Amino acid sequence: MEEICAKFVSQKISKTRWRPLPPGSLQTAETFATGSWDNEENYVSLWSIGDFGNLDSDGGFEGDHQLLCDIKHHGDVMDLQFFDQERIVAASSTGCVTVFLHHPNNQTLSVNQQWTAAHYHTGPGSPSYSSAPCTGIVCDNPEIVTVGEDGRINLFRVDHKDAVRTIDNADSSTLHAVTFLRTPEILTVNSIGQLKIWDFRQQGNEPSQILSLTGDRVPLHCVDRHPNQQHIVATGGQDGMLSIWDVRQGTMPVSLLKAHEAEMWEVHFHPSNPDHLFTCSEDGSLWHWDVSTDVPEKSSLFHQGFLFLRVCLWF
Image (cartoon, rainbow, N blue to C red):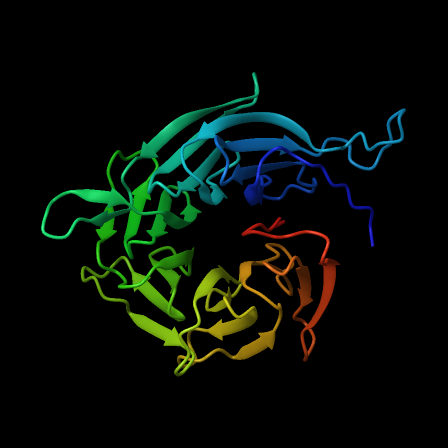
């Protein structure tokens, strides 16, 4: 196993994302973003790994993670995605969705766009409402889709003040995560074990397809789409199982694998080598899966040394 460099920070980290590289770039990603949770003050931060691998005069890594800049974030960071190389979208436990802009010349972050009440619970019998956590976001420039504990789906465009489309009662349960299938279609997962496909070309508020394990209502926490085969998605949930779905073939997963001993918080296909899949869990493990074999194999990258709380580095 290659050398692992760990850095202790004074925050509880909820999300970690690599900054995307320009198309066709042969470089290795060196910058990543983090979001924090359950702190007196939460932050969205940008970090650099620098010249990782070289030793300094004290015998430490020169590439020890260096904080480039950070900005205060109201509420827990529930999800975090790069919109492009300079903008980061953060989902908040307050129901707010914020686009942060990185200024590399002076290494600062600023608010570029914000939707303060993207998700909320309507008060019974009154127009008043209380905030609901925004639980998941997915970006496909110029569009941003958000889902929340309120069962609402929002379609935003980064240069628009208001939502382009909102499905108010998309789900009676909590929506935990969302991904694009094709540009007009998204797929959501919820707290009763369902996958739902939504087509924004349709004017109604009903999903075009629902998938689930028969009789199984285990909450699903995460989903990712295969980068080259848009009909293939992977999901993980409360039981730690890894499920692979072909949305063209019925309503059941094509593969169901025992993965973790506790909740699976994140699943990601490698974007340029999608035969490799990564999952992380509440049980403290991060697994690397090789799905090119007849029987998918997994190898542990980290195990029992770290507690992964909705965190996954993806490449």
